[in-house]
Image (cartoon, rainbow, N blue to C red; front, side, top):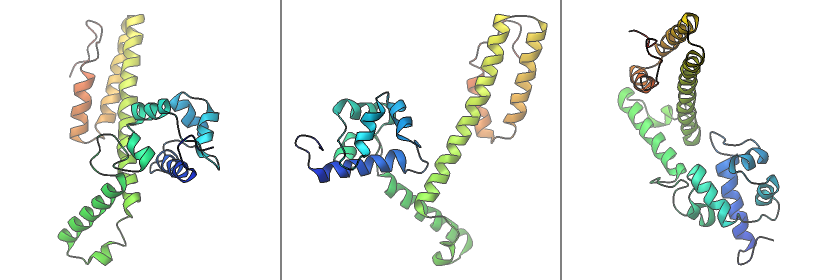
Length: 208
């Protein structure tokens, strides 16, 4: 059953919005119901109930978990009104369409080409949005990996201080710096500000 006071159609609408947000978004957030259940720390059978033929509407506690973990708007989940995310100004679909229009207009201003011609080369709104988000997620992942590498080397030095450990830290820092040279100046500056906050053992702080 869809739930007391909830029509079957309303339950199917909620199912469709959850499907679009968690399973069919760009980029896709979770590849399986099991992964989503683990993310929300609830049984898989509960998640399966949201997506079955006669879906169940999530309980208030689960809707709160989505809002807390994923900034998912309860109003959008239950009623389909407003943006998908808490704090967002517009729904993602409208934002992606406005973004594509802005890109199209900017490219046209630089090239003087007809919009119909440029439309062949600029991806659809959803694809363009997905490419931008995936690009930023990839850059963030690279940054976090580099930061964790430095933190791991620092921990080794703290646990077993000595010349060889100190040399390993210096090598790791030099490798990280070489990797940073591939980034934009803005990204390098942001990384270095955060890296300086890591505490190196006395006398082991890398020079330069």
